[in-house]
Length: 442
Image (cartoon, rainbow, N blue to C red; front, side):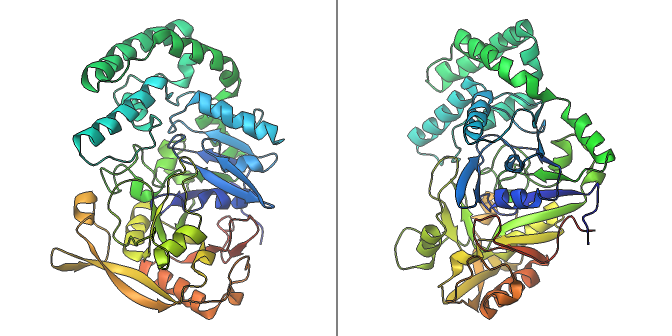
């Protein structure tokens, strides 16, 4: 059955990020003609493995690895132009054509050096005071979103007007240097350095700038299949995640509309990506967390076999059992159409698995993740024990050829979360994917 033209798919992470969205976006792009990034900044990262070669992306949509596919950076993204150009240079060195295929929304707020300076200084101040750090990447994402909401952001479109850019930059630096020097006791940021750098990269960025909202709507009318790619994961969403241990944007599927400039009626299918276990980077509660640093236990197995290091920062990811109650929350706020389970192969060799089906919270039993870090930190997981398997699942592309215990585990995930499993990934490689229901097939 052929894919339906003009059908749009949203790919979202359903845990704390790092679920393997990049591989699935790349895989689905075989059917799509355009891929859209709609939120986040270069604090996120996707690793693609194609024919055994690894490629790490942080801002450019994963569809860039498919020749002829257009890639869009929507207005919901906060943009570090210097990091974008570094990424473009790396792809071009590898022989990937980028500039003719990349469109950047003129409404993207820019991440400037003072944003990163504030980010780093705040975390340092928390550490000095002995209070819990948020665990940011220190790349200025949060402060850039703060400027956006405060209506003082410098946006990509301001690069077209040097005098306007300079005026806004002086006003912002007056405020941010006051915060840096007088409150956070950190060095000030120099106007000339920031301005000259911005004017230099403007020459390279502006040819790729476009009215992304208009282009996406016109592409849809022309029958294009579009793929909307989220960064981070649902539990890092600023509204629905483990607040305040979250990112500074909305990671949920509904933000694909606002962050790209299309109506919500154009979002036809929502694919939730979830690991066969759980991981998170940085601070914040994690009900099913295991000891992932000591050899000889399941958490260490997940950490080492799964190579659980952050793509962007290299930080070790905390590891734990699959949390179905958490995924129920993700399914609810995203309106998931189906699941893709990734890294099933990492569980090969574990003879017993635990599946969290709910929590004990303040003397009561609940079956869905509560809202906010304070409540979540008091949750005690309720586990169901499931047999593991010793046979390898690496590279399996036929569901029926999975070990019976692995099939049972996947079936229990679908039953306890209430979301059907439509895809399973059995290694990082593009081709090692089990397809049960194709998101682009109506």
